[in-house]
Image (cartoon, rainbow, N blue to C red; front, side, top):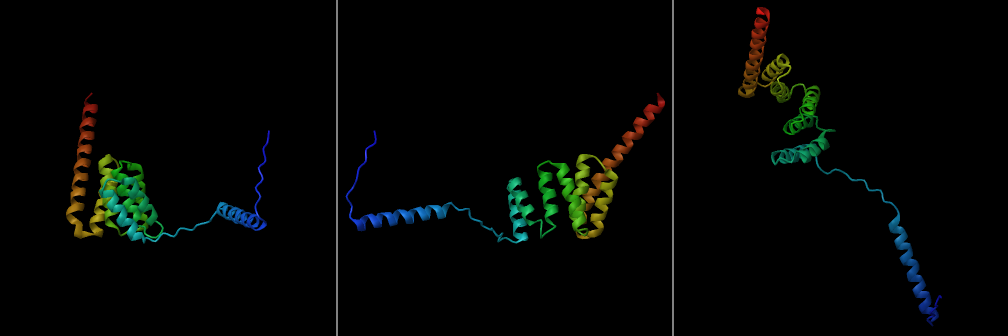
Length: 176
């Protein structure tokens, strides 16, 4: 059963209500159209890197990575910082990838060579290459001699230890 209720409005009031409903309908339709918004990044690449460093110092590595990635298009030094962030996340494969990209993008950046050398030292692989990388860092920036010589010394000690162990194992195998 349907019940109709009729209100006896004046013609002026009915016209006003109808006009209001039409306006509300148009407003709601206007709100439903998709909008295209172009967001412009207001930060400079250097500012993204500075934010990334702050996030990295606070241990917020994913946020740091996002900032470094935002800087990549205009600041290739971001490759180096991405290498550092992934190193701290213990993702050594990605870290190695970004240090190599940093070296390709900025061949005069000594810290990239040193950090890649340190990564190889930590992994215990490519120690000859690690030694060459640390030497390259030292030649590029003698002002950081203490840091690069420390890396170089540790790589050489680890390399000699490995070589001595291999020689000893070879001697034992030959005796048997």
